[in-house]
Image (cartoon, helix red, strand yellow):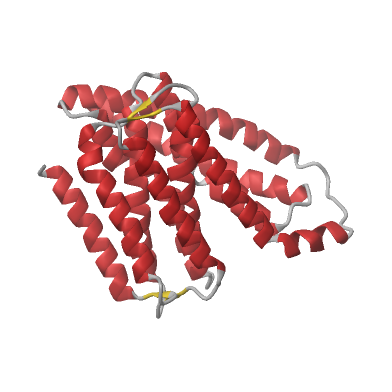
Length: 312
């Protein structure tokens, strides 16, 4: 069992490290291609920080442990909204200001994405037909994001910029990062199922807690960096973008590889908590700010959630 635990920690570390290098290299390649910073930030950085959840979900279905998918999605969204936002609010001084008018539209998509996920997961399974709705909804969300950055995109297209030499080193990092992400995710999933068998608890519960907390580390690192640079609104944007991607794309893409099973234990407790966290986040940020006191509240709620799981 100790050996399996070591494999899990090493595999998860490899997965997170590979995702970080992959995202950084992809960001540099995107800039070399002439893509605007907005598009690079939203699609390359935003999706890159959710790569661990996505790849783990696909491999979980292929390994016959699709219940890991739902546990990881719910756990990642809960830890993103409560723990990651709470820590971000505690670090930011004096508080996080959300001045952009677009932030409220992002929140509407957050609630909509959560509701769609709950709707397709409530019967205990997610099929590929239901997955199509999630992919289409995320496509609509992406179109909104592109139109939001349309002015910046137009400026880049109309401005002559000389490209640098092909970044061969970054392309090699992309390839190596993709391979490392695959093997890291594969060993993470297999070690979870082995640990669950040893301990005698469902794999979905490990995914809901340990795995989801581990895969949200990229968002935490990005948020701390953004706050230190005085871009606290970007930190909240990263959380929103990651949660929308997790709710819509992760289970939807995974369902194309096989039916995603959602255990009853997750539907009865964790799903309502995720929906409540989304609604609570929406209500508390309607005044366009997140204070350190609210950050404490978010963090306490997450700790209570974990305690409830531990003693359930």
